[in-house]
Image (cartoon, rainbow, N blue to C red; front, side, top):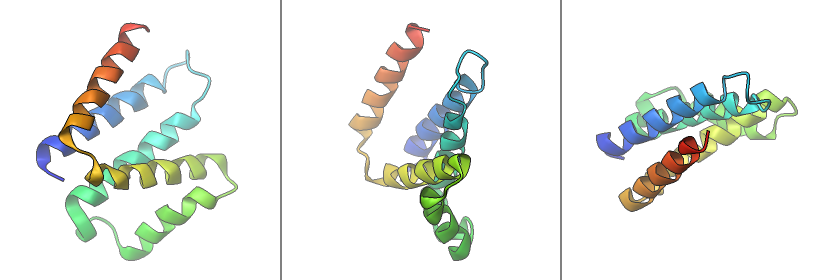
Length: 105
């Protein structure tokens, strides 16, 4: 993942975390999703020097947790790890989709 894609994804995730941290959204589990997502893209960008192998495995296992918040963080982490496979065109499309979403708020 290059720096430009990392920055796009970090900004998207941080913004979504703020959006879901408002009182107008009842689904505050999404805050935990975006926390995991941020961690996942950091792991992709920085590689194995970001966190230990044990921590990485714990984040991956979190998706199977019975705790709803931990499970959401695990889902976000998994999805963040997938960003390395995205093409720049997909990321630009994500930004357009987000722009439309926020225009309707």
